[in-house]
Amino acid sequence: MVTSIARQSVIIKCNMQKSAITGLYEYYYGAGLLAGLCGFDIPADIKPDELRQLLAEKKEEMAAGDDRASYLKTILLKYVPAGDYDGQMKELLTWGMKEPHPWVVNIPVP
Image 1: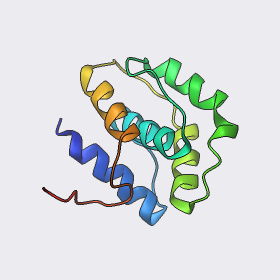
Image 2 (image 1 turned 90 degrees about the vertical axis):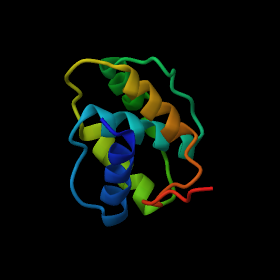
Image 3 (image 1 turned 135 degrees about the horizontal axis):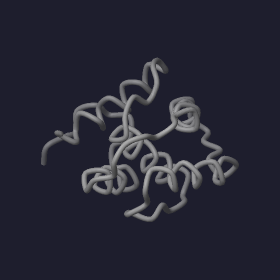
């Protein structure tokens, strides 16, 4: 999968405050993005069920002052992950945590 598609999907959903997380790639990017925005770390190799548990535990720390971040928190906490873990999930989680352009769909090319 092209990872930028998952990134764009999450950002569009949060900008429009429509839809829900529909897969693990979106879930991992979104979790990383919210962690980065709220200032907590997620282990890069965390598995889906562990990530869901961690997000539930960090629910109070995810007090984002932005409507888009609040919407992201809502859709992440509603998502129930299923499926296999792969290396692209780690890549997406890390990208989200280090995202330099949150809420921008098209990334500027240097």
